[in-house]
Length: 252
Ligand code: NDP
Ligand code: 8X3
Image (cartoon, rainbow, N blue to C red):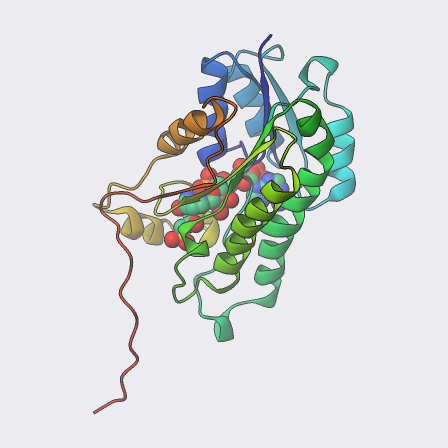
């Protein structure tokens, strides 16, 4: 009997690559995202409706989430793995110059929607001794200028994962937080409002982690023997290390 993964934010980047990895290895997937056209194409690429089910909704809209999940076909209902991947950063400006609306969108998407989805799926996951993988970030661990609410939202994801693990002990449910550093995806286009030059400059010569590398990591976490819980994984490209402490100097 194939296992089923629910992967949020699968219309690009990590989620799309992960859906391909899991289906190539015999799993079924429920894939989500707002862009219905991309989801339809992905479902076809994955082998059609016996392998993948696309559920298009804005993850910040709880009613839309519930409607979409209520409509999941019977043969996709037993979810064994929830990958809370949908998320975004908006802006790179320091706090005084950044937009409050952007902050709220990050909180609504990266935090509120993630806990809403988790609460909704928890009974099924507990029944099936399943697993939850939450996508955090190195921004959760190492603050940087312009990280502000994005970094804080990802710190929430990491600590929610730890605390959730405490609460489900004895159920067989596994919970993992994944903290990637520099990865090449549409993430940077979203963050910079579609600035291709900023995208090119960030990744130029960096040999950034690719979505397929994240998919490989998630596959490893998900397929370890069921008595092993990876609490968290922090990963960076070899080209990236921790930034030095920033020192602001008075003009001479
Ligand atoms: P992408 O921008 O390629 O993918 C983000 C996904 O999230 C898309 O499928 C998008 O779907 C979905 N999403 C965003 N907002 C919503 C929404 N309101 N409703 C539904 N879906 C939404 O970025 P990545 O693949 O790189 O990012 C995936 C996760 O990894 C994010 O949580 C990100 O913060 C995290 N991360 C990324 C890193 C990087 O450097 N790239 C490093 C560390 C962590 P759609 O637009 O169709 O709705
Ligand atoms: C994305 C990594 O360094 O852009 O979560 O915050 S970073």
